[in-house]
Length: 209
Image (cartoon, one colour):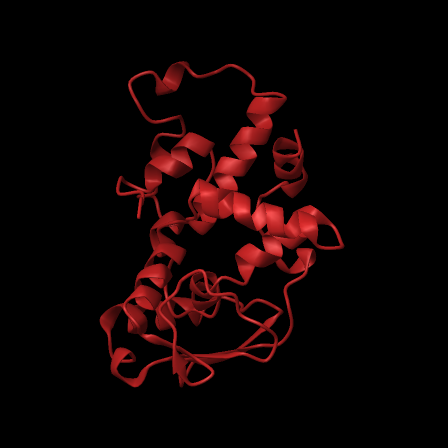
């Protein structure tokens, strides 16, 4: 399976904003966006042309993909599923992305970034309703209980994430017990619950051409 192996901070610089891909580092002076807020590469400083039309739609799609760490085929499948359902396509697209197990693990504060949450899920350290689930794209539903497995609760990365999350609010659609490292899905996320710098309508316009 293809995956991005380069420095994730380059992705933030390419989009010209913080995507919060490195957890606590994004809030410090070490964040590359604070030091070099221009596109990476030899000619990064020269990219000053205003992005409009198709370019603007493309950048919005790329930004959203990078926030949730999905591949192009997987992202398009999410869009096609959203387009077939009744409702606002853009909001349904974001809802599917938010319901990914790796994103929920991150939102509950069991990892400091979605990338780290993906690794924790992949390694089989998460239970959903008492059963081990190691598929990052697994879609959670209302009432599902997500818990860190007992052996993983003492992992340094999990303890660091718990400490970091103790100062952060939990999403409105989730309930978390940080002492026991478990949480529950109260309801499916609505657009107002997804606090991300994303204009989903531009993505819909891009794929609808």
